[in-house]
Length: 78
Ligand SMILES: [Zn+2]
Image 1 (cartoon, rainbow, N blue to C red):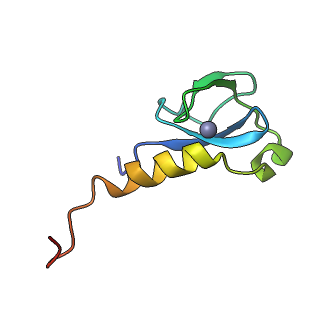
Image 2 (spheres, rainbow, N blue to C red; image 1 turned 90 degrees about the vertical axis):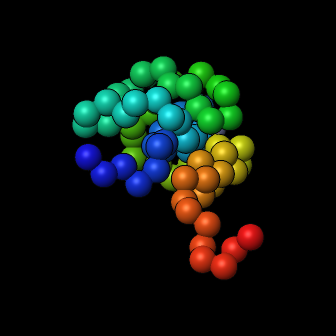
C-alpha cells in the first residue's frame, strides 16, 4: 500500500497535530488517545470544526523533517 508519508494528521487539544501512530482503518475516532510528533498524548477529535484548528508548529516542523528525510538527494546535491 502506498503511504506518501510515515505520519498522519489528527486534530486534538485544539490544534492539528501529526502522529506516527498507525491510523486506524476509517480514521481516528473521537476520544482516541494519540501520541503526537510534539510528544503529547491527545484525544482525537473528529468534528468538522476540529480540522479548522491551527496546525501545531512543533508537529509541522517534525512532519516536514519526516517527509523530506526519506527522499533521495537531488542529482548534483552534495
Ligand atoms: Zn503537535
